[in-house]
Image (cartoon, rainbow, N blue to C red; front, top):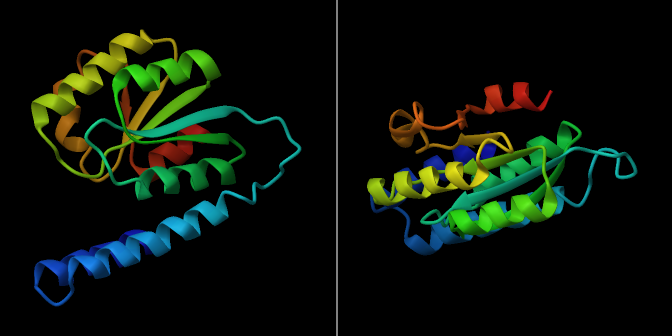
Length: 167
């Protein structure tokens, strides 16, 4: 929550010309480092935990939402595996084949070329072929929901709904 509030405030001030791009990049770097440090301390490291793959799809470079999802999953007893940002559908599907997770979560925070993003998500759903639940969230995810909802098994979730899925 605080990450989002901070980045919203920085973004508003940048768009108003009060802050520069370097300020936004610096704030993002500090939050990124903090989230990475939080992942070093799972609740119960010795316990067997369900695997959750987390990534941002191709075209999505911001990883802060995905890292926040890792922390939420870890806090709810899951083993989050962060794959990275800007990953093509084929690579996410390959990771699913290699790691056999119980769920995959995607973070979509920015709108990009809508037809490209819709195609990427459609291809990923096709590759997964209902073999693994796919949860999609993030600030810009709702732009793609209507285009894919009828043709895929993906679930769109708010943070609160995602936490319910984890339990």
